[in-house]
Length: 311
Image: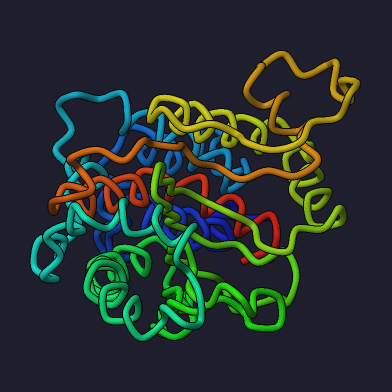
């Protein structure tokens, strides 16, 4: 097969991966690629790189970009997403944690008229502003995420079928989820209660078959393994972890990388980190931290999306 035909088949996938990883449009991604050393090798018939998979070429490109301290395009991946400081979110009121704690004792139907306006002021209103600040960042990670407020932001009310005596939630969340399946629904999340908060990547309604699709993709060639190893290492450098139940016995003894082995041996998982309630929650730094984390997790998110849905 002519070399140009092979490139025509793989180049669009490479450019799409670069565009999603570094939050740039296709033209910028193409320029970044062909100005790189890996792009030059890809264009050189004698290098043989044109015959490798799109994921393998993409992984080499990421290694070059991410380890080059002089490459100005690194700023694209590490910059603060646009709109972070313009949503009106200035933190949660300091009283919110005590209010949630006290709901353990006064969360009754009789107290609802008194508790409802306080809940709205301390939780619903700032949570909505936080959502408004995060939505553009979520879409920059995956433009197929559902961002309709009613689908993303927790309401104040518990499900009365199960919590008739305690009408108000003692926690809050923001969830940006993919629209593709009823099960194995990939998404970005933020959760918070009266003591801790957390954010990262979740797969809602996980199934064994969905997790097996991810494993199968990883095990289908060294290039796939290396790309996952790179993004899992990036996750770890952020202080995040693979959280979930593991198999009692190692099912992948031949995998040398401990992070990848841990990931493959997960029965179920989410990617995240728990933080104690601190001053960050009470100012705009919370929005900044979550947004930057979502951006840095974009590479791993893109891999999981491709592994689960093939897109």
